Image (cartoon, rainbow, N blue to C red; front, top):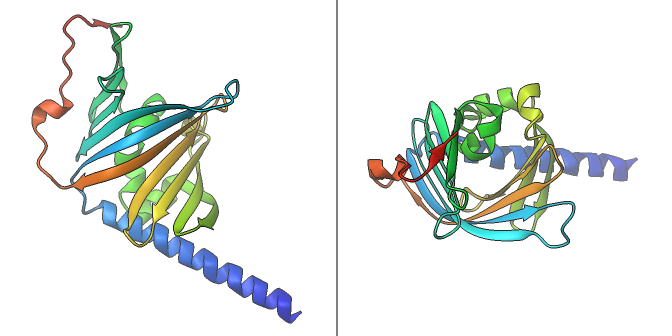
Length: 208
């Protein structure tokens, strides 16, 4: 009985510690007005044995401005002004625009959305299905509460460094069971970003 009680107490303390790490990171988000970070994106497909790895760069400025560049030079570029997200595919020279708050845009604008602005907003939009420790990193498995978002992104996985209070990786499981893991590095917080960062050059691009 004592062993069971000790295991139960340890699990409770661990869960409390994990939630404190998550809430501390969420509280920090309200202090971040702009961010730039390099990243490596790994796309895992059921039909492939090895993930496809691509470098990229993320920039955002509140409220609602996002630049998500994949490839160098960019092969895919997602730009949001907070109202409309424009997705540009350079190899095909095409682009399409969708509402920035749509479920389809979530994979690009999730980090700047309402769900990550405060602990209260987060817990209203996501439920924490699991938390665990991997070395010094705390990992959280999230599930959107809204059915519309779950149809596009059923599961979200966050990896947080509690010592630096930074998000080091985010992984999305999509409806087709593919996974997109984004590993962040070299974040620059609250620097001044020029307006051109979030403006699309659509010369020679067909907008559908």
